[in-house]
Length: 482
Image (tube, rainbow, N blue to C red; front, side, top):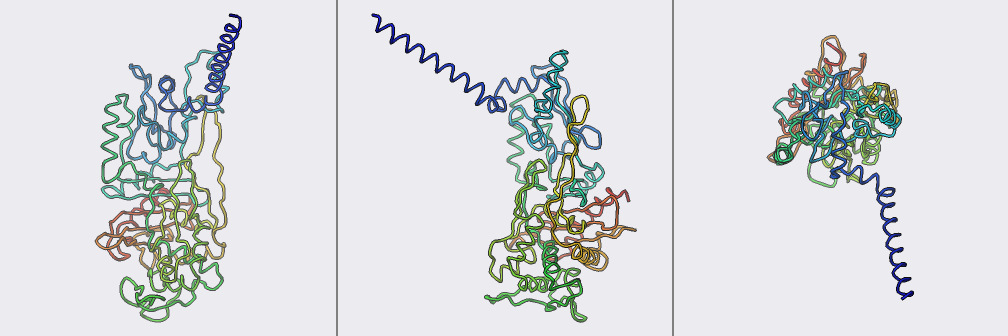
């Protein structure tokens, strides 16, 4: 009998020990994961019981929480929802959070460790807890100009301050209204999300950050940077002037879009090749430099890197070990070269910042509920994409593109604008993407812009000038207040 009791007691103690271990595992090891699990009903109830902090643009809330009379005390609302959706993202009872709502959730919800003292004070004073605020770098005028310019088209616009990396505009169209997903009615939220997800135009895709495109002739800026920094070229160096380039190892050639020599009047220079966007000339420059030199230059501008602004961007790519024909195609931004609009804005920005590439960022400041600052963004340099002397020459070349070349619609009265058009071929039966990148080298405040319009062009540089350049021009004017 005593032996049986001892066995029972031992079994009870083992079971009790296992219960203690499980409780400690849940409370210590898995506490954070359980608390941050968006499917946790207690977490949902907890987060919706406090006032979530606002997301601000120019000091005005573009996302805020309003009191309700239902079980969930606060409803997330978005003013100008479609305009700012690529930046704000959504905050949803069913689907969690995206964009800034997701990346800055701990500040906005008030659970961040930097707000611990604030939470203790609120507890002691019985003050209702609430979240902190997040101020974005966006320029409202530039954002509206970009959205207005893209209206009715699929595409994206990114504008940055070349000297800081501050993102001034972040627009993707078609867009969506985050209010459709922030409702407290789960059935309605699911229906709206399903409809948006099934839309073939992909309104919930952030094309500015998450979509990569063939950059076409805008990539010639990268090729020109590699040429200038190699020491083998300057802006006045003579380049191949034929109407088409015979590609090695193949019977194919690489023609200029107009079928004529780059400079019919005489010898073409590197500036002429950029000014008139001559494929044959840049294909030959690419062959002279080699695929690895082009890839290394692309890396210096940010290709093959992921940027967190704090949302994560897609990675822009340059092909690995291209053969000679592929190298010539890559030099003009074709073949397997892929870039986000953010990346091409960074290329323009680095040229306009004496070759220095700055880290892009979207959050300017985080504040506690009492508006005291938690942290303020400080600009960070990623590296030297090209020498200052080469950047100055390339800037001069890009000014020629706008003043005397393919980018005439990028002009702004009284402002010197440097730019580059682009047409990105998409294969048989598909219209090419239209591109324009630009910056204003002598202006303050500084601004660099990239515009892409999906499948909106024809087979020439005219489409980049006609469709994309006017949008970039208007965004720049909005920042410069012209």
